[in-house]
Image (cartoon, rainbow over all chains, first blue to last red; front, side, top):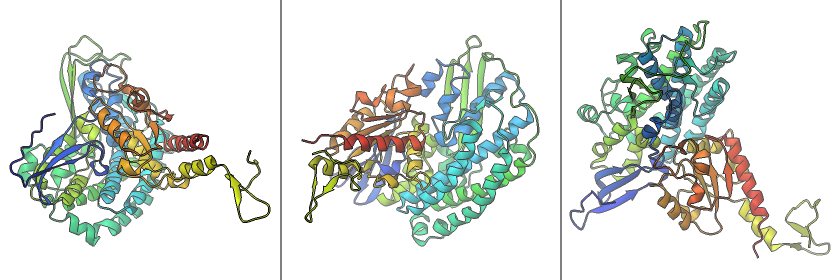
Length: 372
Length: 167
């Protein structure tokens, strides 16, 4: 591999972080040009977990390729599956029953909660606090238990399929989530007590890794990263899917653009997710869990795009169909992590090496989602 | 000398008239090795999350002596391959394994590191099993395996270590 960062003078120094490093959340490799302890430039080197999912999908049928998306952004597995299912349903012009819409939205918001909890755990760990990890995983395990009861899997669900759901939800589904939300609402305040007001945590995050609105827009940042910079980009508000246009919730937008703002956006989003879930749980209608879709799906010829808001930002599925075969002609995924990572050099220019870890923790990267 | 099964201290036998005991050197070494396995933090994809779950309070792998997860291979003696190994990652994994001090053990966690798993067919970039790169002691099936399965694998590894002949 040819080095692409030029060493300008003898005082410059190239530091490699990763690919095996505990705070890169996977196998990301960063080439950092430093002078002393100040970062001059950061260059992410990608591809260490490139599994060729897009190419593989061309050999799988429309029902099969969805399971690959669970393994891309494994913390937003339900949302990724939903994006594919919606794209196929739009292409086939299938209208799913109301019950399916309710349950899909509930599962998506639960996934968002679980993902933000894991981000909070990792954020603490990266800054040297171990207690958040245990607190967050206590809450996260309860959600994975609910997922397990619903679809038999804790992490890679493949529960949302074209036309509806894999199977009906178990009895007491809504009650279990209600009980969970009551507990979690109490424990969520512990999150604030432990980290949000913590002097060390504030000192390491406030004013660090500032991303301006223009840079966020230019680099296609989405999700909490862009919203912390003042960019309104919530797909749930702008391009509502499933139940989101009938719900009342706020899009959290802050203008500081630093790591602390990204932290606050995600914490506030957890409260919003609880609010969304409470609106949905009482009114799950009776009905079928699937619309009628043929066993072997063939899409009409054309191009189809569907975006959803995952826990990390806008996830898009672009399907090209030739109209003849039962597998896609071309699949392209638009993953939020890649764009957010692209803005990392701007956030860390002039910062110290220690700040790089704090900034990366606030980006909430999932590397298999970036490399695919 | 065979150790008795009903011995309350499983690795050594107290001697009747004195402040010393008899044991196998193997038993002492294997006992200490098996109960202080330090895993390397090596998670490439989804299985890493289940590995974190196994470390969390609900499953708590520190009950079995695994809690000292190390970020550097030089301090670790167990590598849990949690996730897919791609062609690009393979040299890195090999180097990490080479950097670990002897004795070293490997657990292949999940379908990807056993055989490529869901990425077995039609892919150009995935290694079809981590045992093409480094020797593997224990395989854990699942995509991803449950934390209980990982704990079981670690206990199996301890049993394997306890059976080792060192001399």
